[in-house]
Length: 280
Ligand code: ARG
Image (cartoon, rainbow, N blue to C red; front, side, top):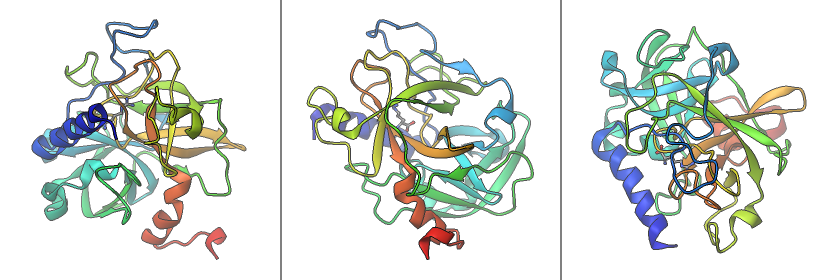
């Protein structure tokens, strides 16, 4: 593992651990040809009905200190990244964590939902970021927003076509979060290509996939973690990824790395106590 990647991971983790609220940044970088001093490649979602499963993970109750994203996968379950919630702060006090659903502006509107339990994937590895997935169990069902179905192992995520990633990213690196939910569309890259020496040199595991432009310029970034990557499979929208990590943001050949939902689908089904037909 490269030193720079390690540094990035430590930085992201430290921010989450220390503050419980990492600054939100979406796609900021000055080296790609498509570089933009504001949000690189992002656009406002505009209507929560377009991504009704998007939720914000917040601390501080009514203060709504947003630090990660997540997706409703059932009325009382949110899928997010393990690295968002694996700190002792949340593990020992799940009731301090809340979920905001049903709004494009996490700090107003929608509904604030309490959390009853946090389930981190048993194979989560904080040094390799393998299986970066966790399920947050809500104290009450969400009445706003709408769950999305997870991609099952039988459903293929094609390499090449674009997927959509969304989150409340800041408009400059290290800057304040965007009040408005943003999205970007990025092409899926094969794990082989993403494991080339000039990209991640073997760090992309089976439980991950990469998406982004070869030249950079469009990406998720710190604070978007845990949030959804969705695409149409067959006729329906499927949750195919969880924002996980990347080296910098929107850098050439340093694609965004996402948890591959089909790889954590079995665990999620078991954890939610609803074994899917396929698992029989
Ligand atoms: N780990 C980051 C977070 O905690 C997300 C990083 C995504 N980076 C990227 N270049 N796509 O918010």
